[in-house]
Length: 123
Image (cartoon, rainbow, N blue to C red; front, side):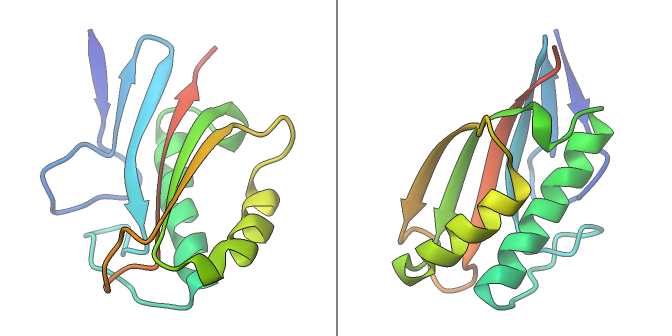
């Protein structure tokens, strides 16, 4: 049995913001979008990254979690030139012990600079 979390950042696209399955919360990919309707907001890399994590935070909170509960993160960057800035901002958001992480570069096309999804543990 699982529970769909429909609070926090929303999208007009056909996916759930998050699903709670047992003690795990699976958060769908979050990008630099308006949290009330999913309209893309183009910005600097840092701006898009921070907006993506703000959207993720609102969904985590709706599932009664926070960044401290995140155990796995997948990050998608459009351009490898943003890797240093990505790691700097990431270290502001997550603290040790850091969640496991995969970082994939060059996969977002021209509309987005950053996207992120995660899994959190509700222990």
